[in-house]
Length: 76
Image (tube, rainbow, N blue to C red; front, top):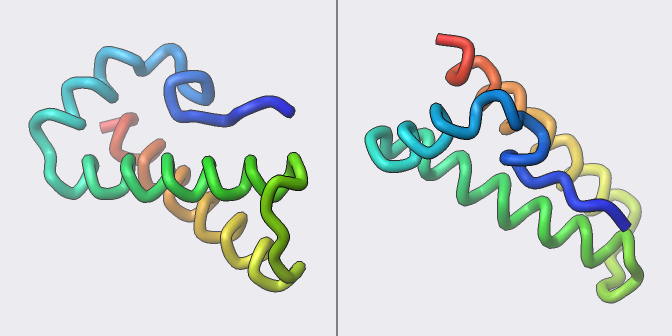
């Protein structure tokens, strides 16, 4: 199953992602939370972890919210 880490989601912004990770604490927190959620969702999608559908939906919704916020930060 394919992973959706931020460097693959936004390859055109790799330099800015690195710069923001090292200079912006809020961006770093979002990046870390996205990475953790993406990993958990990957484990669920591959069957390595089992959670309720509601929990999976909440994680995916949070992941999309974070991704939108990160994308907005990358556009500035």
